[in-house]
Amino acid sequence: MGSPLINVMTGAVLKAGKGLLRDFGEIDRLQVSRKGTSDFVTVADTRTEKLLHKELKAARPDFGFLMEEGGELPGKDATHRWIIDPIDGTHNFIHAIPYFCISVGLEHLNHRGQREIIAAVIYDPLHNDLFWAEKGKGAFLNDRKLAVSQRNTLEDALFVVGKHFSGGVYDSTTAALTQKVAQAGAAVRYFGATALDLAYLAAGRLDGCWHYTLRPWDIAAGILLIQEAGGIVTDLEGKRADAHAPNLMCANQQLHAPLQKLLASLR
Image (cartoon, rainbow, N blue to C red):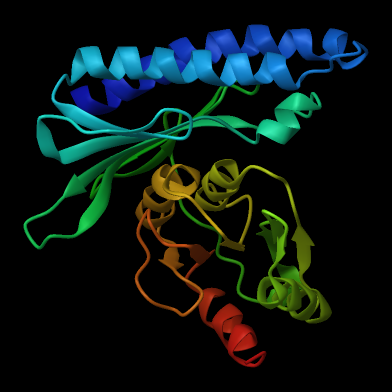
């Protein structure tokens, strides 16, 4: 489908996706058990991450890793590392809600000393949706090239927002922005899987989003997908955002500025 690098990444996520499909099929049966599904999903999460690590390590043995479960594993090549989320949308997965994905981004330390994502894959195994992108080469869903939406008014737009609570902390700014955008006539949703939200935005299914209290594995792959599909990615201050940004605001070309203006009006 793409370069040898993309083929390596897609091969890894497709293999991992088969296991997740099998695990997801067990969730309904486990919902009624006294123990519930949490322990089962923890095992599925860890197993998926180990499989991705094994496959990617075999293909690019010198690259480092940054993983949700396994943490940071430096490689001999200090300029490249994989950023992995084995199940983004874990709470959805636990409750048998079909909105979750595998996310893998490849981060490169460029000659300017900036870290940037140069290749990305997000895979929704339930719908067999394989989102992928390489820097400078476009974004794709399976074999179809992607472009962000062209909607240009808030009244016609559909936005997705991250959770307002994280680690017991309430984020009043993003909550207030959600209310402000809804009052302007836009539809706002919370879906519970940040990486898949970003992939949907790149595919034109959503028009914008804002998220806070993020970790690199939440957004690494999705940032590149949106950029390669023609969207705008910044932090909530409107500054350049990379995979290590604590918050994000993403939208198509027409709606990013109106979102920023609404956010500025709250300060």
